[in-house]
Image 1: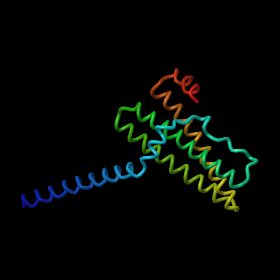
Image 2: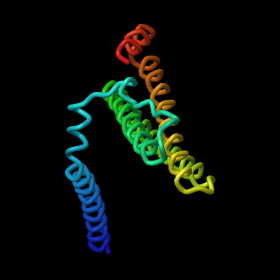
Image 3: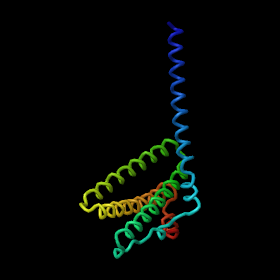
Image 4: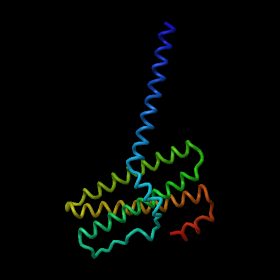
Length: 166
């Protein structure tokens, strides 16, 4: 009976280790699939000045293209602020917790903006509304994260430094 329990324990440990190995292999695959994204972020730092100011006078396709570019740029701003916060945070539990909060925020933003786009009866205008929503939420989050960075890690003096960088 004791030998049987040892075998079961051994199999349980092996199963857990295989599960962990699979998880880490999937994480590595994700990073390998998007290496150019990481290079773009490192090679081209962005500031608020890089977010296109899309004119109201632009026609449908031009307006949408401009908004899509502004969404991508604003997402890079948020990602860079997340990276800065993670670089400052040394506690593993807090890093994990922050990442969970960030993922939840992204999911909430995407759901809300998709809903905003669906509410417009004109599909083209709905796409524009969704893009405006995404850009605006990203810029709000960027400012929020910038405040967190200053408050949690760099103190009051960083507000002046961050605004000078933007």
